[in-house]
Amino acid sequence: MKIAILGGTGSLGKGLSSRWIKAGHDLIIGSRDLSKAQEVAVELGLDASAGMLNIDAASHCELACLTVPFAHQEATLLSIEGALADKIMIDATVPLMPPKVMRVQLPIEGSAALKAQSLLGESTTVISAFQNISAELLQTDADIDCDVLVAGDFIEARNTVISLAKDAGLTAWHAGPLCNSAAAEALTSILIAINKKHSLAHSGIRITGH
Ligand SMILES: NC(=O)c1ccc[n+]([C@@H]2O[C@H](COP(=O)([O-])OP(=O)(O)OC[C@H]3O[C@@H](n4cnc5c(N)ncnc54)[C@H](OP(=O)(O)O)[C@@H]3O)[C@@H](O)[C@H]2O)c1
Image (cartoon, rainbow, N blue to C red):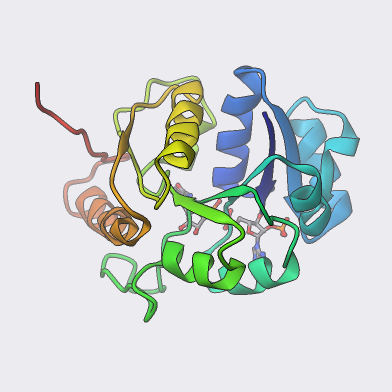
């Protein structure tokens, strides 16, 4: 699949890209800065031409994944307006509001994913995922002891994202409609608090049952 990572020069973008490249996907690294995008593309073993401005990355892909800090989610999505029509966009944004990152602070829209959906409009299918996965671990070959909650209003689009999570070596679950993304986004602040209070490096979540 031709996947564009919007904000792909950052930690999570590099982590997801490296795993999807290994799985055989065709990655485009998006950035606000063309030369930075090209540098990171080469760093990831791609041709420099796989680095593009976010707007071009969004236009050239089949599916996009947004990996920018919450404070820049809106500006990034407005900058690529229209380029994701009839495509899936995975939103990994966690609405952390520094300095109180251990406190759940969901935006007025209910969640970052719902905000993304309202900014992009109905022609784009927003699916939320990966909020609880450590970018640092994704950049290694380590087994990651954390599941992925996949929320979205369309089951086929959720299936696509669950399959991409598997390609990245992760176990992913249907977590219901997009409004349920609030739970996954909120969990990140709890995991950050657990890391700090229990001196863990990468706490995670597992779904159990049989
Ligand atoms: N880090 C993690 O472990 C992790 C795990 C799960 C979810 N998340 C979520 O994933 C998202 C990305 O996290 P990250 O750690 O990868 O972030 P990051 O490395 O701090 O930033 C990612 C990219 O965002 C772009 N960016 C930075 N400032 C910007 C601005 N003013 N306007 C537009 N774009 C800007 C930059 O790309 P360019 O400069 O190239 O444009 C940057 O490389 C966040 O919402 C985070 O909460 C992170």
